[in-house]
Amino acid sequence: MTSLFVSNLKSISSNAHFREIVRYIFVGGLNTILIIGSYQLALLVFNWPWWLASLFCSIIGIGVGFKAHATLVFNKQGYFYRYILNWILNFIINTLAIGFVRSWTGDAWAPIVLLPFTTLSSYFILKWLVFIK
Image (cartoon, rainbow, N blue to C red; front, side, top):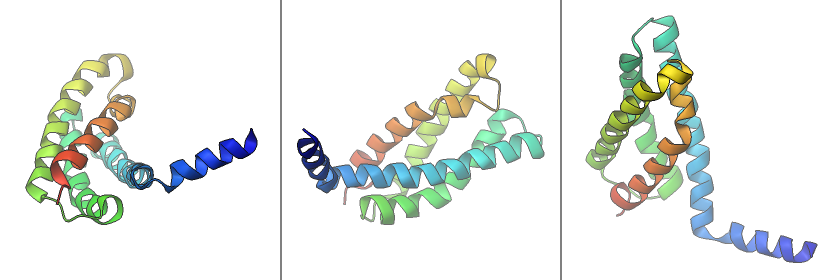
């Protein structure tokens, strides 16, 4: 039974798609830490309103994320304008969602609560529309 589990685990981990997802989660995690940190910095230190803090962290995420996703995750050049469109779409969706959930979570926790949704939607947009070369 254990050898079957180990065999299946080796088979899954050798899959190129699986490795891409693991790299996406790792790079996305680091980028998310940077984004959430810049959001908190803008919100709590600079005392900016939540929507301006969201815009600020999105701009930082665009700068770092495109290069990191292109080189470390998808190993493709990609389309920068589509990457920006991905961020604009995610910014609009995320800002509307933050505006909706912030009454339950507060301004600081709202983007953290929304991370699973943001992560999944961004992965599929990047894979299918941005890094397709």
